[in-house]
Length: 162
Ligand SMILES: CC(C)(COP(=O)(O)OP(=O)(O)OC[C@H]1O[C@@H](n2cnc3c(N)ncnc32)[C@H](O)[C@@H]1OP(=O)(O)O)[C@@H](O)C(=O)NCCC(=O)NCCS
Image 1 (cartoon, rainbow, N blue to C red):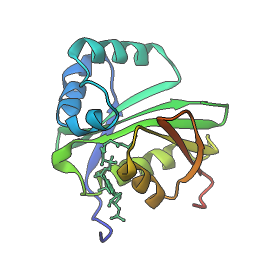
Image 2 (cartoon, helix red, strand yellow):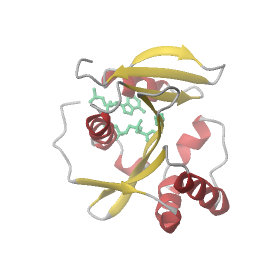
Image 3 (cartoon, helix red, strand yellow):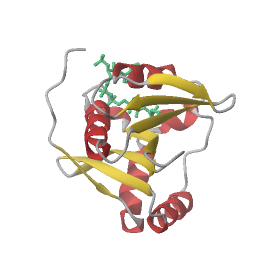
């Protein structure tokens, strides 16, 4: 795919008040939950997650908007698994908006934000998800280790070099 034109994405931290937006992103991404062998989160699940994320100073759930519409989210943890590193546990783009460069742009913006304060960004891939592995490899991530049969850690130094 040719490098897509930068889309005017906005992102902001999501809290319990954003329950419906986050739920809408999950409901428009059913294939991901099938891939990881999980049920689509319920409203109560998402509410619990957002409350716990808000209470955790190291956890960030951020919604990604295009023209005011929530089209995806990133979920990551600071100083995890060690100080000076951050771990991206989910980048999700709603199915209708895939392949437009939104995922790539969201991860690059996150890397730019974290660079300087964090040396490494880890990315977690759950289940059998070769598309996600290719996505992160395209972005310069390298396989780091397995975290059990259903979890792979990828990593990228944030100093600028891929
Ligand atoms: C992975 C994901 C976020 C990519 O978002 P996106 O906006 O569609 O990706 P982009 O348009 O920015 O594509 C970036 C690159 O990754 C590749 N890619 C993206 N999704 C892919 C897939 N499912 N299979 C193969 N390649 C994929 C694209 O081909 C593109 O590479 P190219 O420019 O060299 O062709 C999206 O597919 C998604 O939400 N998947 C479900 C959640 C998930 O698996 N997240 C990753 C694990 S946390």
